[in-house]
Length: 380
Length: 142
Image (tube, each protein chain N blue to C red):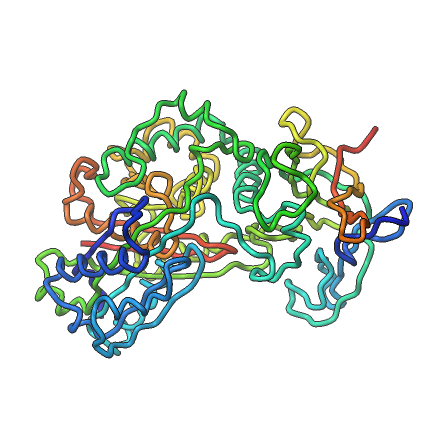
């Protein structure tokens, strides 16, 4: 039994001072159900998550206390993707035929400030200034640039594309295209990554209505089939955030293992994908994830990006809505936004940023600390 | 140095003229870890031994922390007195790559592959006025 997505909803990412995180989740949920032409009473289950917006199952206070199974999911920045994965399994198993996936968040301004104890570390690690995700991302791309010949110009190109695509996306947070010069001259955060090369914590909500594919036609004329949903954690030796030491041998990242499993289950390969959303916490992540997900060889990104292959008009459009860089990251909702975007692309309703030639196969990849990765493959 | 003590016990030999990092080696598979831990991340074994891991290595990757971190960062600095610091992974003789602050803090003075050596630095003073110290790496003097 295939799993179908028959409704999608999004509360715009960015800042919404008058709304709580929970309210933004409820708006997204109602939009997704309206899109499918159903109400909350029809939902047999829900999976949801939020970091700073409160318990997702509190949404029943806003949507209705119908007695459904509502399970909270928490997997760092992989929360949204993990929620969809749980819903996929719930339908696939035959337990339920229709349910809701929802993610929302409302983070304080500025960078996250994680606590060492919550990550199995002692206080010295944070007190001496090593507990910053920005440092890890900078060090990972620094080594990658050294090993695979990626230039600083390519980092700039990825940021430029993100804000250009964001400018074509009505629901994006950063909707102003930036010139190369503006990006190059931005304040340095963590060498080689500057202010415009990182995404920021933000607010927003996103929801999806999923059901058995054989009843999908009751709710929409354009069901999207979720062919596979795979989540993996890290193996020993994977280079990950918040690690006081790293193994001598660098192992394949969880993105590689999740991607391979997803392609195998879907029975297709990277060459079959028409549009991809790849976790772009910062520009280096998008570059590395292109190869880790099997779309090109390590080092080929330099040529791919210079030749425009990842642009909306290229052979593999990547992060067509501007990704995390232009949308910001409400961590509970971020992985679901990627799916929302490819659903619009598959329906042909993505407006100014619509990928030409009616894309048929889409791919989303999310990543969370300290080494959780997931992949969804969707088709019309 | 009587008025100084490690911020955290067990990260490096103390007191010592030539401090070395301390880690653990798995009794079953020989894999190292830093800081020392009782179990093995590699083979899942439950027996390890604390071992000195030397004071020299090679820079594997690096970045620069250009603004003063917020909580949980805790030093005697203020935003006015904050000095950017390097951060990197230093590959030790046993192959393990240890994350560390670096004395060098400009792109011109940092490069992958450069030889590094350990030094101890003050972090802050505690309520009794005792200086708390931690480790960092600096470019090895030739």
